[in-house]
Image 1 (cartoon, rainbow, N blue to C red):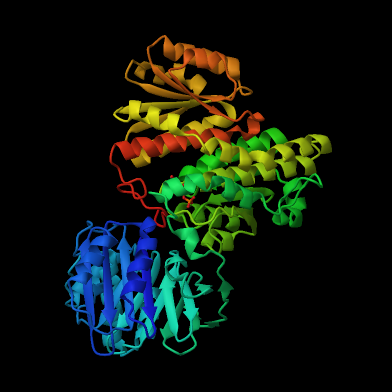
Image 2: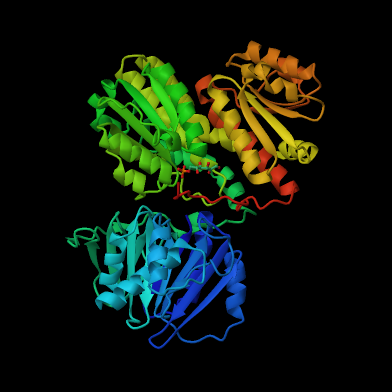
Length: 615
Ligand code: F6R
């Protein structure tokens, strides 16, 4: 995990690095540091805490003219989140400075060798070991920085996105990548580096995403060269044009990114549907699906691999694809799949779902499936991310940048993609008539504006949050399409409010969780009109007779559940297959307002990071 930023050019880099780090805080925020350098010297500032504290610490230092910088915002893996363990790290002789995102798995054996050669360490990090390994190679083999970095990385097992500076060559930076993402922004006479492209959006639109085992040396006013770390071959640079703009990644008047992103859902879903939902023609156009139509038609089964919220979206995908297209679907946590010697058939389609496209477990699981011959289809939000590049085909959600650590619009847009896929697969497999498809398409097209109408009045959800923000536990129940939504609602609440919450299929309640229900237990029940309605009404009766407090998510115009529940939140009436998109919204608001009332930092919850690039 962790976020890294670097700059080499003619400008003073402090502002560039600090603002860049702030944009990368979704990757971790337990300590931060910066190096600023010119041709004569460098200066390092580090703090335990967030980038804001780093910025305060810098403001107390005298400003000198600098033109190179690198910064780091950390999510601790090896070593506590202290100032000492914060990056940048300095090598033993003081010449080399490094920021690193990733894990050096063989660091303890490397550390032992270096200790035997007289090295001592200032931090508990694996990154400092890597840096001293580079210094040791320079000393022993008389190599320049770039070559020494390359030789060191050939000895390393693990993952890295890194930047190294050598004060003996103060006009260059060496960058490299394996497993952890690294983007290079190219401007007139300057280079920017970031764990993603957001740190340099306002400075340049030209970006190169390094691939695994690639490294580059960046020098002001010089063309960059990319090399393969293993083979030493030159690699042609593929320069892409950035599409996101600065406005997309700022709060735009909202108090938190999470709230902004909840409200962005109508637009995000419109963008997901754009060009793909051709209502007038009665068609769905997903180019990757069209290109590989035979693969999908002949698939023995579809495996969906993901983590966290994306895994919940995958579960909704399973319900959609099985019921519409009648293709068997299995959904698995990527972290389990990659270590359990799974059976993969050549005619399997494996769908990887990931907002960031960088989640280490999902990426590794997809690689395993690909190596065993499966066809990989990626559903990602971040264009250019590792999973989208690994996939044989795929589609982007186009939700726009999601900065809040708790995923919101990524989830509803992933479900939207699954809905499109399921409907189109159903058409291809002859499971849906043209008329049926057309009806669904009309309904789908209206979803963004129905969400807009829902978002206009959410004051009653605030009131419900006021009644329950002191709860210690919470239960979420749903059936069918809304069982994964119950899981997602519980995840949202626990990750941002730190209230213990569990999601269950409503009928499972009788097999255990019902023992927890008493007058102190809020139970959120998703009871949409067209989905197993009578059965869920019975479940609500069971909760009520045990004095549980019922917050029901119901379809507009509901009567039966209203009569039973303590609180109701109405969502637009729709076909059952579309309800997850609507039923998710009140659960996002409920988690948000409860977290605010508890004084929690909703955008940066404790212990979490937006993009989990370590396993
Ligand atoms: C929860 C959340 C996480 C992510 C998970 C996978 O709100 O955001 O559970 O869904 O870490 O991340 P991606 O989708 O980037 O692979």
